[in-house]
Image 1: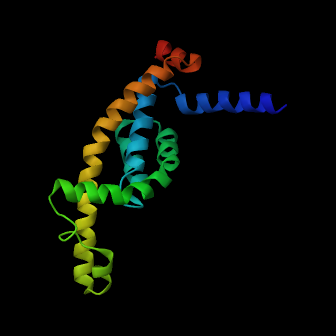
Image 2: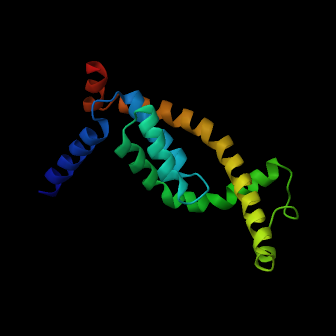
Image 3: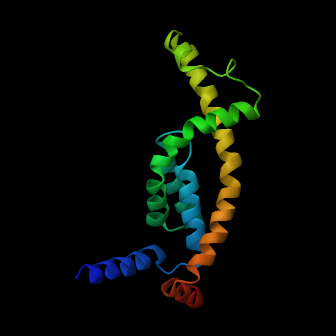
Length: 157
């Protein structure tokens, strides 16, 4: 009984995700969703994914599913992205705004410091995300071409 439900769920998921798109297009959609889902500013990835899906005519449910799937990773990667961005911009710990210094600063200094941290994180994210999307797209395309339901979508369209 459970096995039948699991098979049905897998089949329905493949149909839902593919919706007539080729394995390559679905792979690009999911790779973009995964990468954008790790964008180091909370709340922004959902809007970026929706805008990108509508602009590029990608599968909106698939890109948002990938985005939501990696949401916990987004929070884990904020500090490494800030540190990598600071290192890339040669802004060592003394130049980057620390949490303790922000607590005893004026609101303008806090906003400026957080903006600097966000800029460092976004720079690092861009540098990591571009090759990650390319690699994920190639890997997922390879895997999806081996899924019969997705391979038939490519043959049909």
